[in-house]
Every structure is written in structure tokens, then in C-alpha cells.
Image (cartoon, rainbow, N blue to C red; front, side, top):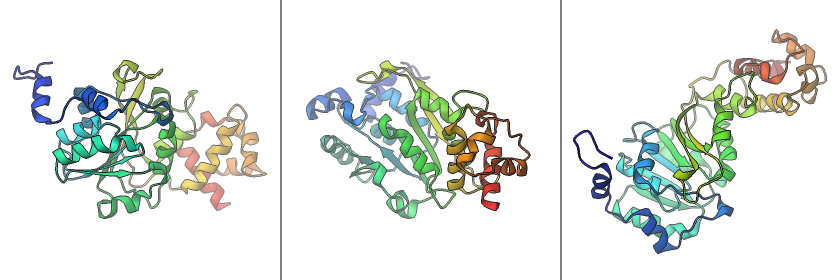
Length: 295
């Protein structure tokens, strides 16, 4: 691929990065992807750099990466200007490869071996809280659980200022889904109430090694300083769980899982009892949550 000045981009990338190609790193360290860890590696450094650029400017921020594996995205983040990265990896086989990256770029990469789901992120990022960008090709098995925990974090605004996260296409579509669609549900309400998510990159299965059975998308999340209307995130979770738990039923029936007299709650928010969960906007769900807490 040619750059605007006519040089070969692939060769330029190799000159910038002193480390061997990822295929060689994987072979050298025996890092074949494990299905039990939901591992699918991206070996094309030009593509990982595109993913890194989805997160916006990286300079002067702490970058958090989850599941770096052999370090393809890690190297791309450094090449795109990341000055300090904390990478959390569960697979002990990857430690040697990641240590080689840390040695090649002194002071820019800290590798923490552990479980991202069990990490206290506010403590983990310390004084950098509020100036953190999360960039990750998330292991698909834990992607939704991680996202929900980050969206429900307290206090708000959160410890991160942006997140560029890769999901299965189906999950990404659910995150940005609009009312009245089949994909619209609890995840869309939570994500869109607290952030402004948008799909910024789509990847076909063949971009990965081994290729997964589904396509993938990178979603960029920008937190809203003050989600509107104001509500308790825990109560919002309860309301959406009840409403979408029986999404084919009218709200006067589905919300009985939340309150014995749902019609009174709906009347407070000027909502028809015959509506279904998919008919409500994100704002109306937040209103319902606030009304429930005030009842």
C-alpha cells in the first residue's frame, strides 16, 4: 500500500517497529490461539494501526488494553503515539512476547497478568483516572460482561474518557440499536444513556487468525458527562431487565416483575400501558427508573 508520498506503507511500518513479524512471534513462543480463551489474533499491523486510530489521539493519556495476546494491537498503539500502556493478559503463554515489546519500548508498556473481570479499574489506573483510553480486541466470551461493568461503574463520569472496543457484529449492533428494532434491548439502553456509542470500523472474519465464524465491529464509546434524564444506573438495570425480560408482552404485564402496580408507574411517565419495551426511547427508560425510585 502506497502512502501519499509514494513510499510503501508496509515497509515504512517495518522500519518503525524493531520487532519481528507477529507470525514469527507466535511461532517462536507457541502462541496458537485457544478457543477456551476466545482468542482470535489480528496479524496485519496495518489493520491493528487502523484500530488504534479509531480511539483518537493517544498521546498524553494512559492506554488500557485487555487481552493483548502476542501484542499486535499493543505494538500498533505504540506506533500510533501511545506513551504509556497497561495491558492486562490472562494467558501466561503471552508473557514472554509482551515482555519483548516492553524491552523494545522502555517505559511505555506495563504488563499485568490477571483477569480483567476481577480487576478494580479505578484502583488500577490510579491518578490517571479520567484520562484513560481503553482500546481492546476483547475476548468475545467476556466482552459483554466487561462492557456492562464499565458502563455501570460509579462514580460517574468514569475513570475512562474514551473506549474503542471490538465486539462480534451482533453485539455491536445491539449496542447502537434504535427503538423499534429487534436488536434494541437492555445493552442499547445502558450504553446510549451513559455514552454516545458508534460503530467506527467493521472487520470480516478473514482479518483474524484463526477466522471466527462471525464478522466484528469496533465501537467507540464517549461518556456523557451527565446522562439525561438523571437516574440510578442500578434502578435502570432493574427496569430494563423487567421490561425486556418479557419483551413481547405489554409493559403493564412485563413490569409486574418490578412492581405490583405497573400502570401507576407508567402513568407517572405519561406512557400507555399497552406499549412494549422496544417502543420506549432511552430517555423514557431513564424516566421510568427515576419515577420508580420516587414512588
